[in-house]
Length: 448
Ligand SMILES: NC(=O)c1ccc[n+]([C@@H]2O[C@H](COP(=O)([O-])OP(=O)(O)OC[C@H]3O[C@@H](n4cnc5c(N)ncnc54)[C@H](O)[C@@H]3O)[C@@H](O)[C@H]2O)c1
Image (cartoon, rainbow, N blue to C red; front, side, top):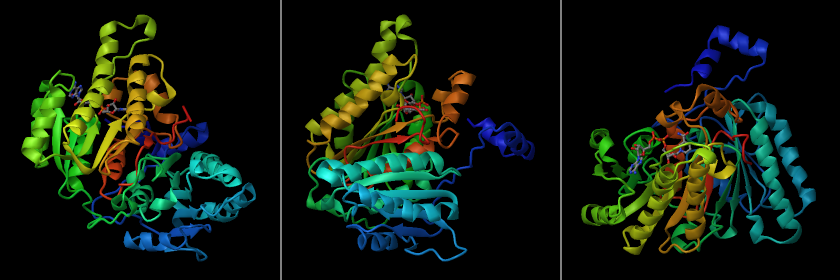
């Protein structure tokens, strides 16, 4: 599976034609490779807020070089602005003062992170000003270009010391296809002492010793999730249907993992999964609900089985499995539950009333659980946009082209982009990252 248009525009004739015709010329996105530094370049820090002292030491701990002044002739790979000190609208000009002079001094695939305080934890003028940051970051994401990504991270003061894993992800090429997102840290649930800091023994293997369940793991996005979680140190237990048993077995063999062949919609699937994890792995630390199907039809032509099967696989099964694992205490303390939603569940899509219902329900599952999970367990979801897989290869050509180009990066994402996002949410240092729905969509123009 590849993006032929992107391949074409990087040829000499393609470059010329896109220039003459004014066609989109997507930048080849940088992606992280094992052993590479998290940030290949310099991070410039700005703003005056609560995190002024924390930020340089946090970055230093991640092996990321930072400065507050960029010398002449030097370019920045990333900009991090601490906006937590902005308490009224007059203070917002600090954004323009910091960013404008630096915008022409960025390297390719740059990263921008603005840090604020969750507006709902503030009142009056400060709340207004903190909420305003969203418009700034979402717009900058759409105009930065050259494969750049821009995010807003709202950090609750109680967890100021727990931002390392999020910075490691958002500043590195691991977040290649994530842009225009608003992430909340410490804003939901009750962070315990354990989650208020984010000490991780080895940042190259943040899942060492952990067990990760991945449904739909035999191919596509699920396969990549299994590979990335394994790379980060986890023992992966892959689940897939009997038709995919041999691919699943081969992959799990390659990853020194374990496999469980079952249909997640089977009546006894939640119990069988819970039993397997308890008997063979002393519980589970990471649960990724990735298995999913589409059965597209406009509602006027929707047969009942298309509706039922999509909701059963994409929503009812993740909900029942999650509840069973929690009720039986199979999810270990500090566990991570990650749902795979979709942009369709946020913006809606023609022919996908069934699918969008199921995927919006996955977001509902996050909302319903985020404030009530015990023992530092978190729940989050990713919402992929257009990811190049067998699922999207089946989409008709014209729709596929539109789907791939209508985002700030003018290209589709890769399964690894979703997998890296899940690895961040699942990571040992992400205990305060709870209740988020993070879009992996290249900042799609549709749906906010
Ligand atoms: N590809 C995209 O652009 C995109 C966009 C948004 C969301 N998603 C979501 O990402 C997830 C993975 O998508 P993909 O593109 O890799 O799809 P895919 O069809 O390539 O893989 C889905 C996997 O789930 C498995 N599966 C399906 N039904 C199952 C069941 N009842 N029990 C167990 N396993 C089952 C399949 O056998 C397959 O291995 C899905 O939830 C999908 O809705 C994908």
